[in-house]
Image (tube, rainbow, N blue to C red):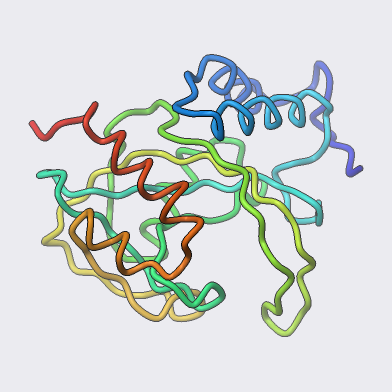
Length: 203
């Protein structure tokens, strides 16, 4: 176990805020209920979960980016997963995962987004198979992922982040599911994210 310097009474305020957000989160289904419980447990152990130096598991933030009409979502074609997928990335020491999600969207697509809500939109523990990155082997591990619902103008210029994705594009909500070649994500995650949009109608 990788111990955190921020454990016990010395946890940063942002870490405590995330813990509180997770405790207050209302799970959408059994998958979320199970994963939220595990995330809370892991945070309370004091383990360092915000850095990739924890090779077993660490926090990531993802974004379900939709347009103002709520009929399109922004996807990137990721090199590692060889599939169209949502946007997001590693916390890399930042305990404010909403900030991480916003930053990753801009880095990966060039798009500037805003939160539709500051609250957690979805949670999921994701498995990552071992792979090579920048010429170095990364062992199989878990992503403790927190997802936020963001909005962006679909008329903004978009561009890929060449070292991570091959392309970026807006797709209709159903079309996005068809474009992904990862069945588990389509069935368990992306379908759920689309279904939850009914609580956030276009203004």
